[in-house]
Length: 327
Image: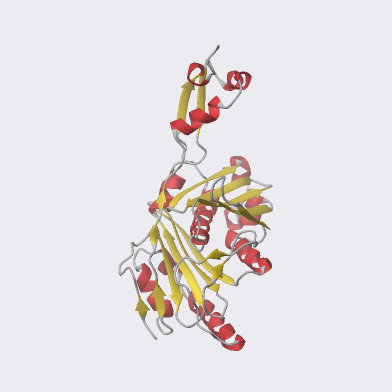
């Protein structure tokens, strides 16, 4: 089979996850584009260019990894460093809500020459954690890999290499444009060639998740499967940054350009949106859980001010709003 089969003819240009499968190759993939989502999240903070770049990369990778899992809850990708950038967090709900933030030392970031402001120079090493949280009544999965290499995508490559679950390959592009930030990414994963129902990776490797999308792969012998995987990776690598980023080329147009000779099937995708989960009610409940002495220490002139690290929204309370009522 050649060409493309599709369940959604014209997906949005960006802020979208498109699942796909290369027919007869035992290869499943995801294509993710962020534009308005990344721009909105980054714009809420005065991030230096290298930090904004890292955070945009983190959000794109979180979105593409989350899209390969079948879960109800929150998938989180978090890096903790020992250098100028101390924390990077991006999370994606099963409904497509994305948020992210970074903690950093502004002076230390500014002291790093732009030409060498890669992952290791900015973070000084540390670790990258993958977490799937489906609430208090479900098992929580977490995997950890060291921060090493020049980029976050290299760390994730390393994670899949050492996890011995499934082979995976990535291509990622980031752009700072006049209106904000864009990211485009493709992830390929090699499925078992035994056919039938296939399972996906989990952060801790303990229990496979069902794949989002189709159910089966073709039977192939070992050499044929290896050749098919290598071909898929080579075709993916031929994608140019401007093609990954858009908006000039549509998502399905790019997948057709890359894989039409072998046949590519796209499944129902989903939109992504920038959306924080903070609220005045949630913040108020957290404050009410604190003791009287702690609340008084946090208050300034009888007022408590709480700023959300993700969206930078500010919530103000008086001590009377949150102090326990006297008997």
